[in-house]
Every structure is written in C-alpha cells, then in structure tokens.
Image (tube, rainbow, N blue to C red):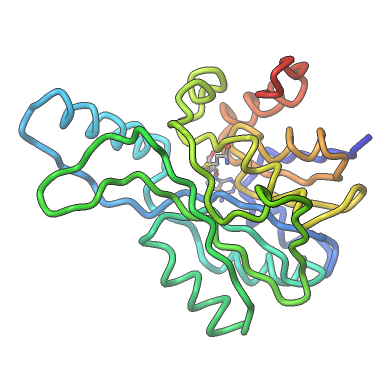
Length: 237
Ligand SMILES: C[S@@+](CC[C@H](N)C(=O)[O-])C[C@H]1O[C@@H](n2cnc3c(N)ncnc32)[C@H](O)[C@@H]1O
C-alpha cells in the first residue's frame, strides 16, 4: 500500500519544508506559457479555440510558473530524476536550466494528440505537448519496447476532462509509464502541481509513496475524490 500525502497549498510553501534528498522521482505538470490566441473572425472553430484559451486563463493556467521552484525541486530530489510536462514556449528555459546549467542528460517525450483542432495562418497545429525528462544519477529502465518510446500518441483526453473537471488533465497511461520507468515500488514520487490527481492515482496503482500539492481548492477536492474512486475495469481511472 502506498502512503499518499496531499497538501492544498502553494507548492512554494510546502517545498521549503521538505528535507534535502528526500524524493526519488519528480513528475510535474505546471501551468504552460500560452499566448492569447486572439483568433477573432467569429467562425465556429475560432470561437471554440478562444473559449478553450479563456477557460485556461480564468484558471491561471496560461502564465507558466515561478522558475525558482526548480531550485527547490533539485534540492529535494535525491539525484536529479525529473519529468516536466511543458509546452514548446517553456522548452528553451527548462533546457537551459537543466542541460546547460546542471549538466543533466535529457530525453524529450512527445504527447501527440491525433485529433487536435487545425490551425491556419502560417502556423503548425498545436497538437503536441512535451515531457522533458532530465536526470543526473536518476534512471530510466523501461520494461518493454512500448515503454521506451519517446512518443505517446492518442486522441485528445476529452473524456477525462469531463469526468474529472480539470481542463488540462493528462493521460493516466502516459503518467504511469513515466513513473514505472524511473522509480520502483516503495519509492517516493512528488508532484507539486497536482491538478486532478493523475500522478497520485498512478502512484497508488504502482505502489509508490506520493507527495502532492495543489493550490486550487476546487481541483484539490477533485483530486481527493478521484484518488478515492474505485478504478474502472478498463483501468482508466
Ligand atoms: C497543468 S495543471 C496539472 C494537471 C494534472 N497533471 C492533471 O492531470 O490533472 C497545473 C495545476 O497546478 C496548479 N498550480 C498552479 N500553481 C501552483 C502552485 N504554486 N502550487 C500548487 N499548485 C499550483 C493549478 O491550479 C493546476 O491545477
């Protein structure tokens, strides 16, 4: 049985009280850095893209995060062993911090959505999110060919978004894969941007101890409810 500790707080207040070298693996999905799409035009597609952006903005999910948190994450991590979900605008800063600054080795995992809305006017579609894996002493030991893939491809996660009421919920099978690859049973995993609790559910299934922090009370309550909900037969909790 895993030991799960959850905090409804700003993670900056919790992280400073965690001891040095106390966490085996960190998996975080902080708010992305998104430009206002300002689609205009009034077409159905434009309106729908603008609505998505407005909902994210309303929930403070478009302004990135305080990068000083990274110093605390490095301090609490036994050896740097960290997965960071991000969008393309955050990649240069994260690479600069970990790869140039901390001399970590890295992999870039792509989460590709096969049915994302099309974009026009000189842009590629916004159909890919990234998970930067950085390590210095940490490890990645996939048990099978699929787990070693740097591509996770699926239709958009709209079912989970509706079911769990969080606009940026991540696919549980992908999160499970990351945790399986870079930790073992009994290890402690930290996610200080918990959202609807996907990492907590994965840790419970995989027998990892878990520390989760979420600042928004509505999402915190969703996460608690989700963790306590019995898994569906098809495993898509
Ligand atoms: C991208 S969402 C995480 C979604 C999550 N991976 C899931 O599958 O549901 C980021 C979350 O971090 C929370 N958050 C933002 N700033 C925070 C902070 N300083 N401390 C704790 N949580 C924070 C937001 O409220 C939001 O729910």
